[in-house]
Length: 430
Image 1 (cartoon, one colour):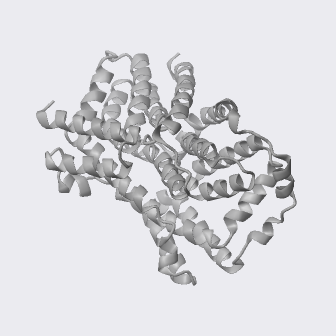
Image 2 (cartoon, helix red, strand yellow; image 1 turned 90 degrees about the vertical axis):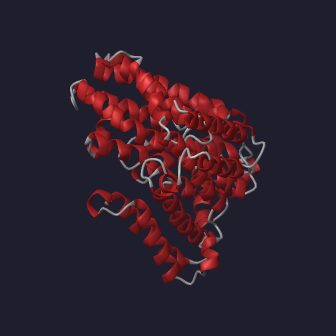
Image 3 (tube, rainbow, N blue to C red; image 1 turned 120 degrees about the vertical axis):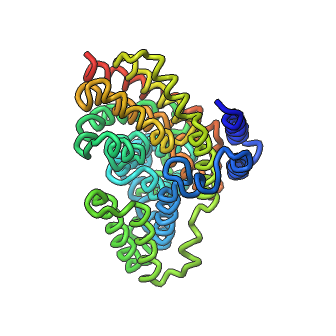
């Protein structure tokens, strides 16, 4: 590697250490590292702001912005209070039942929409229902972020890396349903069991609080029915736009921004009110993170590491599959899985062709998808949904530290990836 590449690695590791130890605010660490990457010419303005593979992913930024505005308007209607009371009553005030209900809803919604949109919608409900039952919100938010990453892996539209893989590999929506979704259902059952163990100290039942919840009428929580129906109508159109992306050819970011614009323009909500719920620090952190990781892509660091790992398997399909699964999970834990998958896809495409094309070699695409999607659960910065949840938690004065998330994420990732390995071996390699 070049001197610039080594400097980029050093800057990235220092920034990552600062984010992990929380010595300085993660936004400051990400922006500082991004600035240094530009200073040493590991990247430049063209690559950082306009490159599809090594720059800021503006589709992610504007998707988040649009959905945050829509969620901000929805919050004024009282619908989240309604859903919080409904969920608590369905769980009969039992903390573990409540977590199961929330993570299952999150996983299913993430498969149909995308994981970032889902956590934006479910987090406000979580805060309210935890407040009602006097429960700490952090464990529920962590579980939901992880459930969104697991559930999002089931479909082509559930997680952004899947869209990249589908494009490169010529894979359809049904391919993901057939090859990914069956195991994801099993992994969700296992994940619910892990939640029972990992968060067991949280599940303290309070009969008095439960009785108070059961006595409430959730319909009384709705403050503005007209605004609610307007907001739900726009949200429904946005969701349809997401699902019909292959037909309409509008990026989810465009659909989200259009929906936000229509909602603000067509209702009595002021611009200032609609922007109050936008997580600006989260958006800025993402921009800095994209520039940091993009510099590693631009200098060839990620590509070289990936090629070294794959070449170590000496071209054997079984070893290549297991190696790709492990490397993808490991690297997606420390860098955002979107640029990682964008970098690895051309390499995997060549390996697939060398191993029988989309016949026997297709298993490599599923190894990449499972590794990248599930590896994102390992750390607080491994997936977009994790970062969004941490931003929302900080805004609501319930900060979740890097290590609080990661100590649970490492366990969940280890167990789920370990279950993927025999699935791939038995179904595709025997």
